[in-house]
Length: 304
Image (cartoon, rainbow, N blue to C red):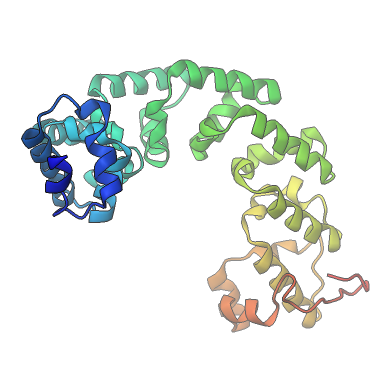
């Protein structure tokens, strides 16, 4: 195809060009027109601040944007700014979901209106969709069904709204995977009620691998604080490597970490460094976690 050959001066590989020019949305264009449209869109994206790699990925993954006029794409950016996004946020969102350029602004405004009826404010919706642009690709019926499904797990609608404000990607998780995560956490020794409370406090638990959770819980078990995850789930955000290293750092200095002072494990890195004159990097080097690290014993003689 002549179009494919004539586009090789752009930084596309042959496979990417083939995918774009053969897309159903572009088949009606004659070759000279198609060549010019792809070139124009590519140059437009570069002019707006996308890298060449990002422009290639966007047009390859969503060839339909090559059917748009530059005027329409410019107007979409202005419309999205009027909704409440900055230009930088629009660039970032469309890297993830380039088909936003194809969505009518009326569809976007209607989605915002529908989400507000569920209990979100305009500002919260803007923040959520910045983090998860694919919300605009979900029907409001799909979102309502996800809320219903989550309520069957034991959350109230208000709790679902609060959780998804902080972790909108919950809307992209299957309910089956969330049910499995609950079962996996129960197998680690928590009741279903505790799991629900933990995930209300830290919804991102649903995004953690069960192996990561297992490592953290086994560490808490080893220092006789199994219920730490249920009492203070946000502490699960700290890596097992850092928790392990700090625990042994304290232990070597005669400081026993228990329920009364466990927060010492989780103080900010800057505060820790200023208090103990050791960087996080050096701490992790001295007290490595895992198969490559030396097994240590705590004061009760239990292997760590």
